[in-house]
Image 1 (cartoon, rainbow over the protein chains, first blue to last red):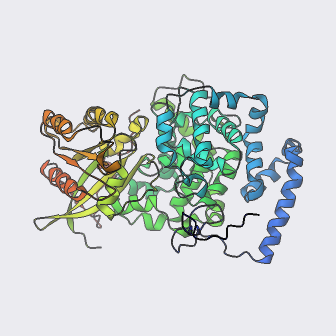
Image 2 (cartoon, rainbow over the protein chains, first blue to last red):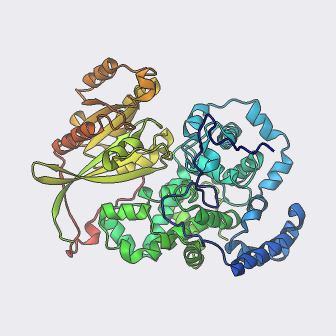
Image 3 (cartoon, rainbow over the protein chains, first blue to last red):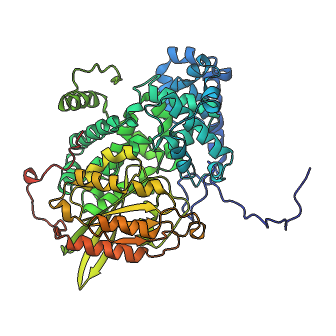
Length: 354
Length: 206
């Protein structure tokens, strides 16, 4: 009822925030590659997709497992086209296995948040305002967004005290919190790091960042195999993937890529695993290949951290990424890497090829 | 592009998380400050052209992630550095106490030819915060530490207000230049350098 008619309250008129459809503050003029004003046709197509998806997952996800068992390829194809935004939060929980974790562990999250203390609390607090700082949900100091982010990260740092809190985890948690509740986001983080469905990601954050090192090795070799001319150019310019790709893996493209692209990558990432990160990385290099091979070191580094907008259009980039085959190579490169590091005695059930 | 000869000076910025490394670099290179920097993941990189006595140099500045765990990724950037900037926050004793760790760690990882005389510059940042009232590390204490470590040049800055940033970086560039490790680089022209003779740059030491 209280329509605030009094424009000149103590705070003065609040300038209207210009937000994009995901809640990020709009950058100056740059249209972020999204269709402005959808046509009636597009709108209807979107509606049809949502109806198909609803049918597929059933009420609250009740039909999901059945459908998945019967028609995994249909699921894969639909996910690759992008999960409808209104169902994303639910579907992510279903495909990541986090929903099952949540149901099997009632009360655990609350316990972690309320009763436990973590050695990482100060580290987490320091980074809270530096995680998606341009998103409206996380902007307000001590607001609900920042509080949720803190809770999820603190809970995780208690849940696995060896990993604790590592910079980068905040971007995973932040992205998830835009689509689900704190507790759901926490269990999805657990599902990812502990490997509910795919290879566990915790090695990205453990001391020495062993999995980052492994992925960078694999990525470097893949570039050399699949884009030899560029690989050669990188060697000449002394560029290695740790200079540009570590944040791709550590935050699964959520750190600095356009949000609508990051979401599409996450759809596939949660269903198909980390190989999509390699594929997208390779697709970006492939798309920009002819420019990149001409650039000297400094411009090259800059270009690898600031891809042009057309390269980051999901409808161009993702089909290109899907067409790149990496599974077999990744497996071989992992063995190579383990051998190089004298780790071949360790059982390696965690990387599965398909 | 003309194949013009230049000199490259490589600078690494180290220090605890949140002391303002990214802000300092951006203030120096872009003359801008933002409240909206994200925590640096891995490393970031900017360059700036600087001129000394008619000679043009490219200052290549590597901004690193401050969390200790990311140090294992640092190796690739530390090598070949001409100057290392150690940053702390004058409002945080811990960030000051850690300067020595950062210094030692750098010398181990970068293994410069002459570690005794490798140029460091120390920056105490965030002098603007709370009008200086929340300061816990005195200038005297910081200068004493720098003196004890072989007269490391010391600057107090505010990356937010742009105070002393230019001066600090001029000193950094000068020291990098003096370090004698001038690395002549040639912008790639059509000469085939012969790939087999190139040292592999990737090899992450794990």
